[in-house]
Image (cartoon, rainbow, N blue to C red; front, side):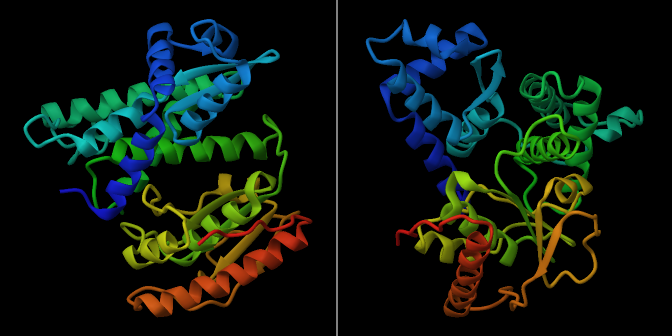
Length: 328
């Protein structure tokens, strides 16, 4: 049976696919391996802006990867995201063997491993490494990407409450880390301010702050969140409170602080994690004194969210960004 968070995640993907044009686009890109907007437009009696709109919907849902090539953009299908959505709605009769048990590094250390579950994890990670190599072509080599992916798997394995979809989460985490590293080292530009929210478990305050900042700031800001001692999952009450505000945390998961995240940030905002966050010069550090929503009822968590929203609006104003309206 699906959890609320899993159902919301699957619904977002299925909504993006619930259009015949977008289904055909995915099918065409899978068949070609990678495609440009112009090439895809030749298959439809639609304008290029319309094709671009549909591609953006698929990209925003995590179903496509894109990389710039000269003056154009290449698109590839995010196979890991498609597989995750399929696994969430599959019946037990057809569901693949869950990916549990042994972390990938065990194979490298020569330990005996159970067969099918391990093979599933390795295949998923191998596909993801290939997709990340495409996304970060020219910035990082395959060896670096492979290391980041397996490190991310190991890190999340230690804390994840549910390990069934761990390869997908590890690939997302590795992708975020590689993006931050590329920004920190000047391999890719930072067109908008980068904000990092850090709390203890990355299951409550920092998740709410990140979601609110991204919604209110739109394309004018980029946000990450992390925790000093990550929990196994995002607080379900926090997910519910954010859902009431029209914000979907169903696909989010707790992540640990990494140097990559901090080095890429322009503003680092801590919330009750003490001195666990390393200090790097040239960054603005703020500490928001907010109660922990853990084990609190819905109305208390909603009040904490209100306080966070007030602080987020002030932060955006300080960054020269006009906060958007939050539809409820």
